[in-house]
Length: 165
Image (cartoon, rainbow, N blue to C red):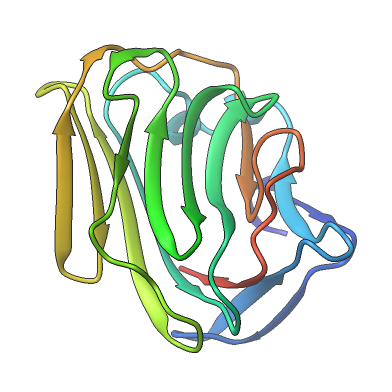
């Protein structure tokens, strides 16, 4: 696995939006992770961050797409709740998350991007070409992170579907 990722409970890979996508699933707790990813310089939360993925689900999209955090509480998380994408930054004192105006439906690929713009105090989420942003204050908690694809730091809130880069 690239970047030392652990394939928890045997995620499979199949044709995705571009090349292969990882198939993650809440049934069987299938997701990718790397504990203490501090050795990957771009994963350390200490300023601006951008997360980007193609996401597909054959049912109403639900769960964490990508996270960099400890125990699911500190850091950042890009997740979907009842088909609506969110991007959250723990440690911010106002507007700790941004909610997309797009509701995702099953059976479609979506480009989802979460951005923490520390220089301009903004949290932004892009879904396909639709941007939603909020002004926040404070700063995202700096962590020696766990990096997860398809779950949050403690292996919960697992997304069911495909995630492609």
